[in-house]
Amino acid sequence: MTAGAAWVERYLLPLFARYFSDRSAVSCLQMAPDDPTESERLREAGHACVMESPKAGQKLMYPDATFDFAFTGRFPVLARDHHARVALAKELNRVLGNRGALLLAVGNRLCPLDLTRNGSLIHGPFDPSCLSLLEAEGILISEAGFKRVELLDVNGHFGWGSLPAFIRPLGRTLDTFWRQFAAPSRRWLYAGPFNPTLLLWAAKD
Image (cartoon, rainbow, N blue to C red; front, side):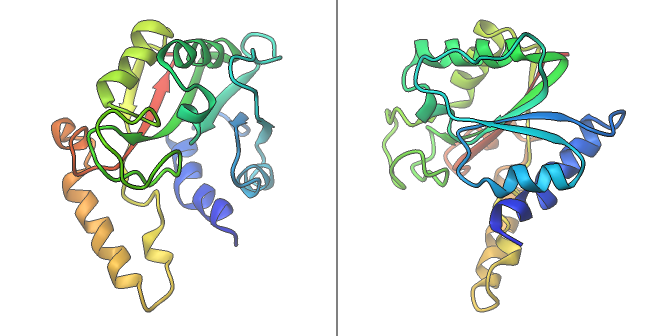
């Protein structure tokens, strides 16, 4: 199984079971995919998935409320400044249905390490490829109109436990670390310098 398909199996499908438990099929929009096998695995699981790679500032060519769910790990690349990020977030809100949701994975501006591959691995506090939690919430809720943003667990997202056997102990150590220092229930730690990746579930309901 590819890394993308394994992530869908390990991380995304359990989220569907949690948030879309009343739906047998979820219509999905994957923005700027870096691994097409994610969409393939979603289709195998019975969900519809469209992949889109719009140019900066380009509007999405879909009617209102077309999708149940959208996701991307390339939000800062698709929209490189605040104005563009607000416009993209509004477009994503528009194409989602009333109970739709958006999943974003973005580098945490307050952590010097970025594992999202949107910019440099090591970055300073003003790197445009990252967002702080407050910035992300301001864009999604205050400006784009999502009702709430839920912080998702980083543990399990990277799949460290499935690394080759000789480095698997390191991966398990990292998962243990993030269970302590990137727990969604501890917002001040989640948003702080020990957590490199913000995983945000922006909901319309």
